[in-house]
Length: 169
Ligand SMILES: Cc1cc2nc3c(=O)[nH]c(=O)nc-3n(C[C@H](O)[C@H](O)[C@H](O)COP(=O)(O)O)c2cc1C
Image (cartoon, rainbow, N blue to C red; front, side, top):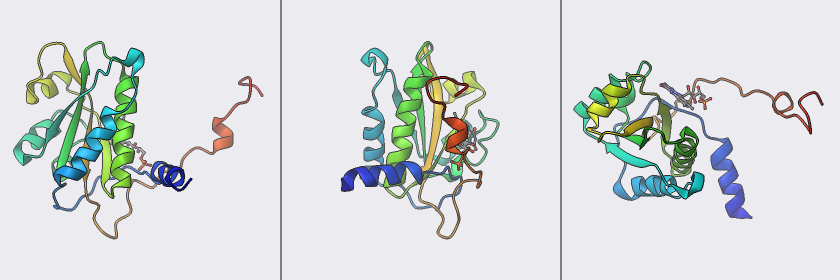
């Protein structure tokens, strides 16, 4: 029971955050996040996701130049690129990413998913073999104390989201 409640809290309290302290993420904490990604289920159990972990500032800056809204990611101590085959399912990458983001939240890390709009650029920065692409990048680090995470946007009310039996009901 207690464990379930902790999981629910980690899920519903997750907000995406783009400001981080300079504190490095230790290997054990990072491993928990990667392990959470590894354990996500995938269609036909293909397990298509692979992870490229970046901590080098210059390298993170190179990756940042491949997105349109990613100039801030070098400030995150860790960037994790989730890589899938060209024809890999984004749903599988999404499950993996969300597992990692929720695990990060449970571990006290701030995080945010980031789009790489320049797909070829991101492939080149990460030296991906042919046939692989970056599905999403996760920026992670410890939150700046006193700052509220996220951009404060409200979620759509549940009643607006949920339909019973048919759309019209
Ligand atoms: C698929 C996906 C791509 C995203 N890409 C970016 C991005 O490129 N840059 C960025 O700053 N935030 C990005 N975000 C974060 C969203 O802006 C964020 O999830 C949304 O604003 C909700 O934030 P909140 O949880 O803090 O309310 C992305 C989120 C998702 C799910």
